[in-house]
Image (cartoon, rainbow, N blue to C red; front, side, top):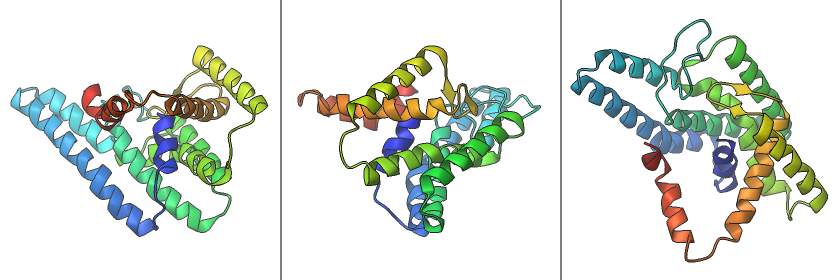
Length: 225
């Protein structure tokens, strides 16, 4: 999931807070609303009223993980579309943050850390607001990569990063939807290096495979469902 946040800003055209809000509502919030409504209507049409209720709660909380995100409650989940609202808020928050401070990467790390702590130990917030805050650090990484890292990462740092990445794949996990991040903040380094290595591999993809990969990328959610 961090890969999507990192690449979302890496290939993103900078906009003002207002433009980000309008554009995000059109491309992220509206698909979220339509998909959620269809899911609930399908449950009702199948006379699965209990499931429809669960999906409605999941829609309100924009919950993509397992039923433990609202502290002290058994919260149903709505599935992978939670990512749409999380990315919407993340884009908007980051646009505002960039206007406030030049230390956006450091500020995003602090804000995301607080979001992980609040979401994991205190309470979740409705409509993906807190997961949007949690994704800020990954969004800031993509922005830093695009604007500050002008050339390839040197071999020493890349090797160290790959070792950390391999360790986290083997012994750790990172779940933004559930605010669960073991071995924090090493997972943050692993998330960036994993994304960077994916980018390097994509550059070497044979030309005849790229159209298929682009089609899969554009239809990821449809394929997942």
